[in-house]
Image (cartoon, rainbow, N blue to C red; front, side, top):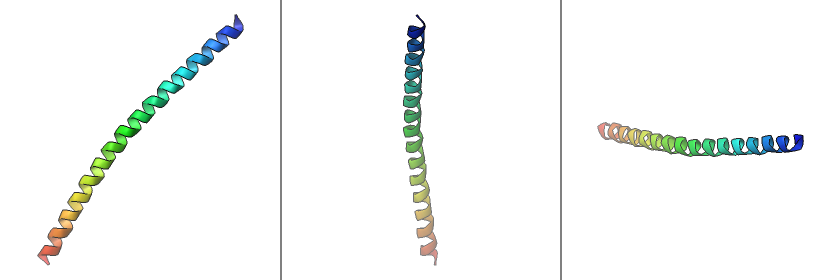
Length: 57
């Protein structure tokens, strides 16, 4: 009985760690997408400002 309890606890820990790993990966992909979008917008703004400044000279 004691061995079965330890096996049950081990199996539950593996499932919990696996679920947490999946959650971390999904959140990471989501945050990476947002960061890429922000970086693209910042690049567009910098390019526009640079072009505008060059035209004024």
